[in-house]
Image 1: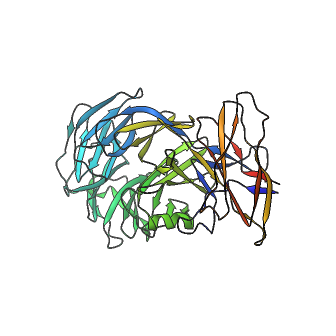
Image 2: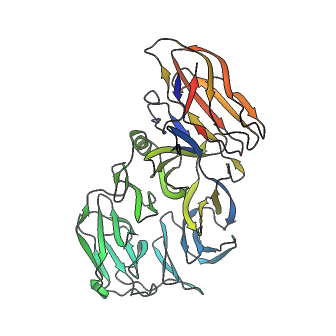
Image 3: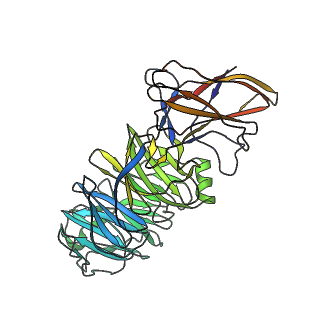
Length: 441
């Protein structure tokens, strides 16, 4: 008899009985050339750089360097990890960074800053002076009004000049702007209850932007931080209705994710790429992150530490061929297949679907998992639950050494119960792809 050890994560935070299946720090992938699936580790992290400041606000790659808003300063990090502070800024959780023809632009704490390669300045205000967000599109820096309904744009290819007539109002619906973002060459304005799409007309000055026909959608953004650009001219965001969306695709959330958004504290969204998988994460203050795999349409969780605590990543960016995440305390970590999370273990947890038989007792003489082992020494732990994962038995550990490629991972004499749920856990920094189906007898 088979048991699906590691189906796509679907455990509801307030209804474990509905589904016990859970993947933490790992995800499901179709087997190449075979039927079924395997479970792969999420990318681990290793130290890359650090900047001063406690709260990590935003990060972006511009012309081969990372620019970071952390604490009350803008920082530059080069490809070797060398960091330098570029100047003092305001500090706020609502921060956005973009480039403009070699300049670096930052919006944070209602202020607008431009780094021109030599100095950090605050350009004179144009149509308004309190800024909520910014992005670059069509050779313009476009800025939204903080807690307002207007947006304005710089002079062409000149981030430091804000002409007073270069503005318009996002008035398709009567709600306030939360943030703006350039997606696929057009400018999206996300508001409390709706969002609008504006395009560059090719004209200059006050006529440079116009709203697309039909470019008003009645889906708002839940909060400033719950948005992330996705490679490939799209974006991932949490709507005001507590559903998760991908621009150009539509809603992608499942009930457990929507329950988590409603009952817990979502703060940020970010994304990264991993061997053909684009991962989009919702970071929670008080729970592990939920991660959506665009390639498979499945969800899993991301956590940190041995106790699977909330993941503290604040933002992500790609530099060269690698992806980087920023964390509280000013850490910048490089993502790679290290099977470790910086100085902490990357604990991979795989909880099976619950095995039951119409309320009848099921006796299990042995349980076997099929994994690629022997490339590095390691240990795998297993424990069982008889109540869909509410309570658990003791951990039982199996070990292997380098070269033991054919060793079988079998646990025997497991007893009987009306319900069986198994958890497999690996914390060693060893690669441990595992078949999504195990064997019970």
